[in-house]
Length: 255
Ligand code: GEK
Image 1 (cartoon, protein in one colour):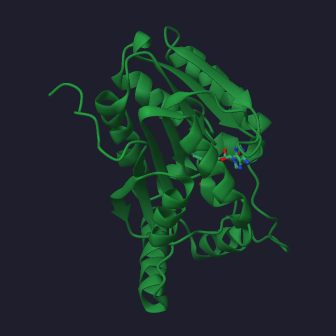
Image 2 (spheres, protein in one colour; image 1 turned 180 degrees about the vertical axis):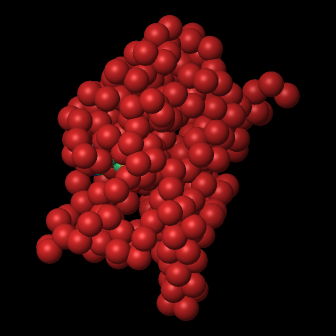
């Protein structure tokens, strides 16, 4: 994906009124650079998806990647699993993202069963699946819409199925949260973002990205029906959880 990627400079010039953040063509062009420099642990989480799938996914099962953007999770899975191991549906609301994801995935993994559809994950008619990836997408839904989506994912998962949920999180304790946010801004500075870029992006994301606490996520997963969930990754205020369809995990594959 790096060939068609530009450096993210969207908030590098003063904007009189910072517009609400949206996933348009401008964002698509620099998205790989933006997400790598602004989401701590992004590459590590993607790298683990293939390993998680190789342990939990029934051969030939269906996988959803919800809010797939440029299809990075699909690429990660196709990089680890052979073409007959899974069928992949990437879903995104942004036409610009969908167009670019289709191009990239067709070029990079032509032998895999891959489709990308333009749809709102709140309205999708979910088919039975072995794995669902929600990589930094639930955070963009209005808080009141999140429960219903997660409950539908629980219904769609087959026995043995797993949901991988990665999110920006907030700490319930104010002091703890302030420390995480300050260090997160240090992380962005260290990755080359200026003070103006950091503060303008923060304004643009206000009321667009509303993070939950880790406890809030686990409680929502339990309300949706998931008998078990655990946090498997955290780097500052970014985390990834896995939720299991079954109370008792089936014996991991390959052991
Ligand atoms: C990755 N998962 O690279 N329905 C469908 N898509 C949506 C909706 C919705 N209701 N709301 C937002 N999106 C990716 C990264 S980015 C995260 C995900 C980020 C889409 C939106 O268009 C965007 O492409 C994606 O969710 C969020 O692993 O930019 O921080």
